[in-house]
Amino acid sequence: MSDNQFGPPQPGFGPPQTPGAPIPPQGAPAPQAGYGYPGPQQQPQQSWGGAALPQQGYPAGAPGGFPPGYPAPQKKSRKGLWITLSVVSAVILAGAGVVGYFAYDTVSKTGKYKVVMPPTFQGMSSEAGADTAQQMAEQMKQDTAADPDSLQPEQTVAALYATEDGSRMVIAAGAYGKVSRPSAQVDQQFKDMEKEGDTVTQKKSVDAGPLGGSMSCAMVKSSDTPDLAVCVWADYSSVVLVMEKSDSVDLDKAAADTRELRQAAEVLK
Image (cartoon, rainbow, N blue to C red):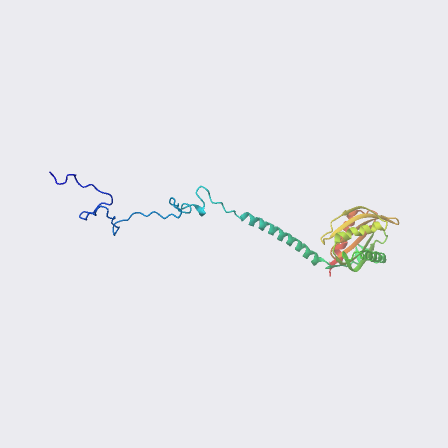
C-alpha cells in the first residue's frame, strides 16, 4: 500500500511551482514577480470609477481629423474669381487706354493746321468780290464769340471765286485756331443761317475727306439771293463755310468741290 493515500498532489491556486522549489506554507503571500516572471497586468487608472475610457481621437487614416464616413469638405477653388478679376481689370484698362488714346489724338490735332485760300480755284480767280467773303468771315467770328470753349479763332479766312461771266461763284469764309467740338460748330453754322431768316433744306452729313473732321451740306435760300448749295467743314483747327452758286448746282457736286478746296487750303502751320 502506498503511503500517499490521497493520490498525487493536486495543483493549488497560483502559478505553477518550479521543480525543486519549496512549497510555501498555506496562507503565505504570493511571491513577487522577479526577473523572468511577469507580474499581473495593470488596468489603467480611472478618474471617474467606471470602465476604461476609449482612446481619444479618430482612427488612424481619417483625413484632416474628420470621423470616418464624413468626407473632408473640398477646398473652394478661387481660380474662377481670379479669372473674373483679370477680365474686369483688362476691360477697365482697355477702356482707359481707348479714352486716353482719343484724348491724346484730340490734343495732338487741336490747332495744328491753318487755312490759306489759294489764289485760284478750278480756273476761277479770287480777286473780285473778296471783300464780301471777308465780311462773312468776320461775322462768323463774332457769332462764335458766344461759345469760346468751342472755337478760339486765331485768324479769319475768306475768298470769292467766280467765272468772268458770273455764271458760277464759290464763296469761302471761316477761321482757323482751336476747335474743341467740330461737329457742333458745323450744326451751329446752319442754325445761325436760320436765325437770319434763311431757309435750310436737304441738310445731310457728307464725307469730310482725307483730312477728317465733320462736314454737312444743305440747300439755303434767302429772300434776296438765289438758291445756294452750302457746305461747312470743321475739324480741331478750322471752321469754314463754302457757298456755291451755279445753274446746275447740287449737293453732291458742292460737297466734292468743298473737299477739293479744303485739300488745297488747309495745311500744317
